[in-house]
Image (tube, rainbow, N blue to C red; front, side, top):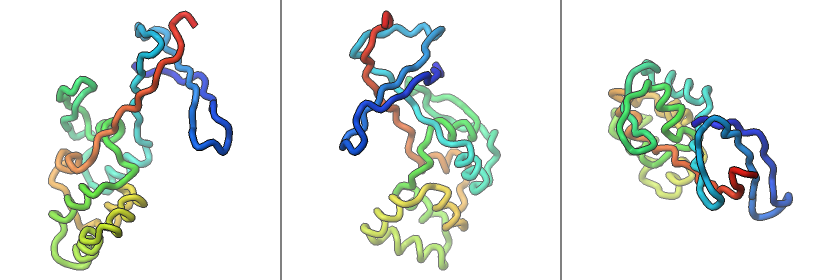
Length: 171
């Protein structure tokens, strides 16, 4: 169910080491039933610009069907664009993608640069911490993935954020 965020306020003071927030969602018409103490799972989405940039850099058709897991862990077919938007983390590169690139770049300058990063743990950690997939695909543009599904296999799924429900339906 796609709920509307109708109010959002910070509960902790500025400068606090914590960032506790109060969110109010409109669940009218959802049929959802809950009690205080239940959890609400929120699934993030990637920005359309980031998704479009990834599609352009990979060269794949955004409507190509790919298989992802639904919220119950069952496989389902969706367009590549939708999978990138809703199912995979795109804003932070991982060591896994660099390993995947290693298999897809021929000998030469780019491969040497990649190996320099991959073979140095400190450099590798700094590299993935400061880059997203657009940065990586631009820097190592000689790497070509065989299919959208092969590319997606290098990505991490977007995990749900769980929030505790603090009020009842009667509130």
